[in-house]
Image (cartoon, rainbow, N blue to C red; front, top):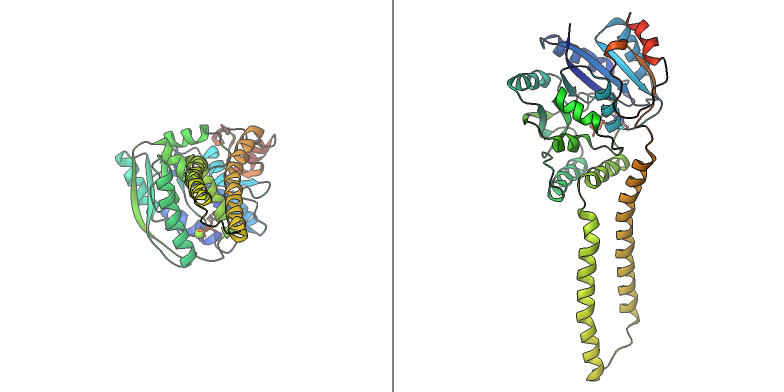
Length: 336
Ligand code: UDP
Ligand code: MG
């Protein structure tokens, strides 16, 4: 049967949930009236995730597995899934069942109505810390203000995209990927379905603060130049105010109003300005680092092994990515 829908599931150390996720996804997809494939992407897990999914692959021909050579990150895992997907539409869903698989059916019906992007909009988030919820809330609003690209508020990567959109995303070669922004940038007819984001089924979050910050920086730097402009705004404000202050100083001197030896204020001003200069250098550094990443032109990810793909349905990745020779051929045998 022709593959109507490819479901992409990125996984990083998800041994506690993955069996359950598979069963729930299968249940849903069996009702979808579409041929389907489930592509699990193992993003360098150090636990038994990969072995468990491999075992599933051998039993279920609809299940496929891509294994990275190490942890490349959630956004890269999703991108790899898209490279390998052959469905007429693609659904991205987290492995931890925070996004209810049942919603895929609703997304599919919107897609059949003619929408090319159907994103899940979280109207409520259960079981997540106040810190996570507040930072997410602030981040999406800040990003919305900083960029002209229409990135819908409070959506994650849980969404359905049409083959056309998937092909556009595959053609984008940038390394610091912020997939939900790229989907917004691509345009097309978009709509949303609302859902309540559940608690993680088991296990702990794989997005510690460090990853959250780098993800947020990727989002902002990929879609906005405003932080760079900040340097000039702050520069103008500071030079204007120092110019005014110059008059105050001259005024005091001419009318001998007593120039107090102000060691403390000089130190304070010095620290303040140095702080601003360093901060702005840091902002520039964020952008320059990303330009550097792009110019090295290394592959986005390295595939160690794939399971379940037949040679003809493993699309050759559009962007440079490293897949060892013979991986698909070897895998064709598994698929039998
Ligand atoms: N994930 C991944 N690579 C990583 C971190 C996370 O593939 O480096 C996967 C993870 O297995 C899960 C999804 O990305 O399927 C979302 O991660 P998580 O649920 O830990 O994030 P949260 O929901 O807490 O933001
Ligand atoms: Mg989660």
